[in-house]
Image 1 (cartoon, one colour):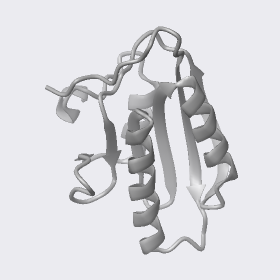
Image 2 (image 1 turned 90 degrees about the vertical axis):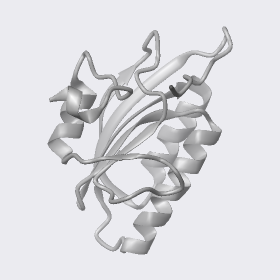
Image 3 (image 1 turned 120 degrees about the vertical axis):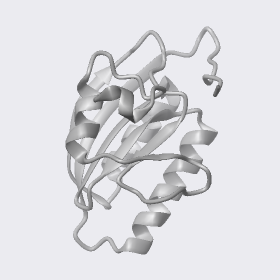
Length: 142
């Protein structure tokens, strides 16, 4: 079983979700680079969550220490690869909902992170659900 990332007592857990449209001039190689770069940065900062992409729209729920989450949000808002960003959730949850960073809409594995077979509506439903727990198997969520 994967161990949850731990926090010190003075770190505030923050979560947010957003959706955005991919920039029209983004090419496949850039998407792969974006996913790899995001995954590495999130793991380094102990940011966990779920990310979905259907070829046009990004959907993401992320959680982590406040200091890292504010930097991540600023980075996403300033990233030209995202258009029409809509923040759909800002919260200070009591505990993590995810042990790792789960991807949807990608085939195979990239540097060891796992993917789940889902479409944007399923990812968005998971993010909005009060009982969302990305540690459970995808089939348990239907």
